[in-house]
Amino acid sequence: MKILLLSSPVVQKDFDRIARLPSLGLASMAAHVCDLCTVHVADIHGMKDHREYVQKMVNGYDLVGLTAMSFQYQEALVLAKIAKESGAKTVFGGYHPTLAAQEIGMSQQAGIIDYIVRGEGEATFRELVKAKLEGRGLKEILGLSYRDKDGFVHNPPRPLLNVEEIKRPLRDARLVTEGFTSFDVPIDSVETSRGCTQGCKFCSINLMYGRHFRRFSIERVIEEIRDAEAHGAGSIFFPDDNITLDVKRLERLCQAIIDAGLTHLRYKTQASASGIASSKRLVDKMGEAGFDGCFLGVESVNKRNLAFLGKGKMSDEAEKAVQYLHDNNIIVSTGLIGGNPEDGADDLWANFHLARNLKVDFPIFYINTPYPKTQNRTELQEMGMVVNDDFTKYDGLHANCRTKYLSAEEVQRITWEMNARYYDLEWMRYNKVKRLYPGWFAKEMLRLVPFYARRRAALAAGTRTREDFFREDLESGELCKGVT
Image 1 (cartoon, rainbow, N blue to C red):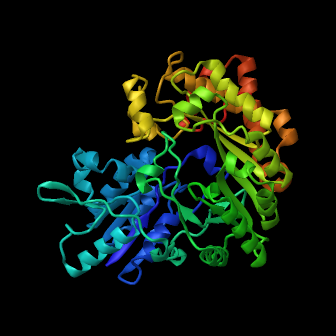
Image 2 (cartoon, rainbow, N blue to C red):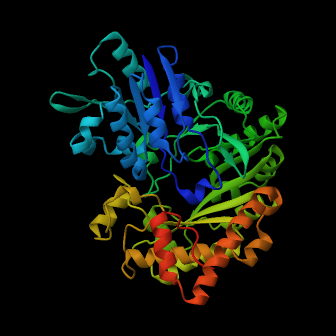
Image 3 (cartoon, rainbow, N blue to C red):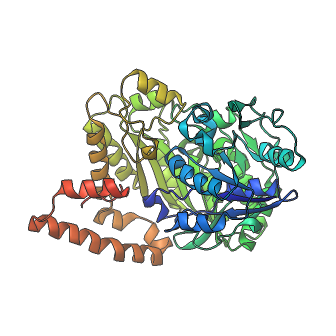
């Protein structure tokens, strides 16, 4: 048997310019079947002609796997159709196929999907491959949905795996090895834990893993870092769902990186503001280990919105967290969510001012998105706030809900304006990116300065309007530009 696993080609263009990472999940899946068959991973995100590439590649493969989040699912169906026409069976996995398996099974597109691996996929996928090789039935495979003559069958869910049973990702299975960088430095991912015990209403992680937190051994993580470096990485991203749930463990990991002589690499992660603010010693150790980037989930300055989102209280420690990170020359990005039910224009701009006051290097002004099956979606639907069910727009940057005071388009337009206004001369003065990655920063300025100059000239000449530029960016999907 020959298996080809495809990443989604659909990316958030604004983020892709900063970091493009190869799929860790698909490399992990490959590791669990490589002793049974020939398996390859094709990271096709960012390719200009990904459909043509897939058309050429799929011939000769018996099974083609695709992974997708909600905004990526429609294009995954297009690629699945190409795979089916080549004679391959198709298997889907990831957040959207897991959470929407019942709906997918009853959809018109169900005919081009043969299997859905739900939730944590490594063991389920291995059992599927073994069953196919041995000619056995599929009804005993936990976590699997599959199509038979009467429609889709959904087997019971699979319990979470013991992390000791999860093999290290098989990076040698990757067919595409170039073009994955952050700030122009080759990058790869290494997970140190899985899951989160928090109850954020907008998040899908609990629907995948439940409210559990499982830790890989620090020894394994160090081995993984070495393997990623051996495969060309100069930067490592830790994609853990909530790496600061265990602050002392993260500090031990930093010390292990130092002891292993791996501080020449550049490390990045995502973390809670409260976790980072809880320990200056931790953040100092992160700086010593080589961390130079951290995404903080701050979400909102508004207590009412934080309660609605299930965040409890905003970390009143956000200022402290950012200061600790900046003191260690770590670039700070923050997630700030607008477009909540009670939001007016001033509430959206309050997030802008929070980011400015904190001197955040890269604020991400997310828009509240009603992801499938989340509590957030249920409540927004009950309020009559959801105005769009086109999942291709469910990327966190498009407005799919109105508020009590703003239409979805007004939320979209204000957020678009916030993005452009943030990156001004004051930002140029304090951001750490220009110091840590001067080459990347200079290249971006050479791209953006003429871009904005042309827009300003067109406005002054009266040949274009702000509305024209708003519509242009909405069409292109690059929503973090605007007009300065």
